[in-house]
Image 1: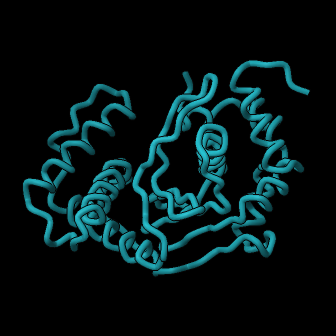
Image 2: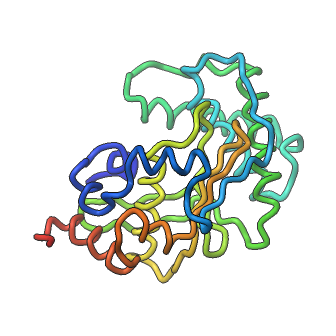
Length: 242
């Protein structure tokens, strides 16, 4: 089986077949604001800087999302989360990052108060941003897999919009766009959801990119959503495509 992370970062043939227009030139056009009117770039907060080691960015991001999700689920401010709850969130984040890194290095002693403090700032920013949505925010809903593509959990879904959260110190990458395309394909193929838009948001940089899904798919593939997702499904099953 292939995870959405693996598929978004590898499988060059897959993406050249499904989305030949999704390349660095397209990404540069979006970054400069030269994309279709149906796409929107929003600077919703000032960028943050951090004195924490860049190598710990993934760990901080994992803690921040855990704090955000816990506060959202309980309908309380992050400051009201019990210390024991924070310890559980940190332990779960450490375990997940150790698994993703696959280096075998024990990270249990890495997290300091500074890590937790900055992660909480990011969580608060994300809470403020998602509070603008009128629809209920679903956190990590499960999407069934198809073929070799494993089941997965996107960060957030609000009504008919899928939201992926990134907390890197740099702007979004092609692999981030591919990742949301995997999610919407699995939602289309395995559920009754008919998503209409996707967004990438970064609380660290205070920026979001939002795309009308139909326009995005047409722009990068020249196909309708139905045809695009059919290609995705057939590729996942190893069928002859043409």
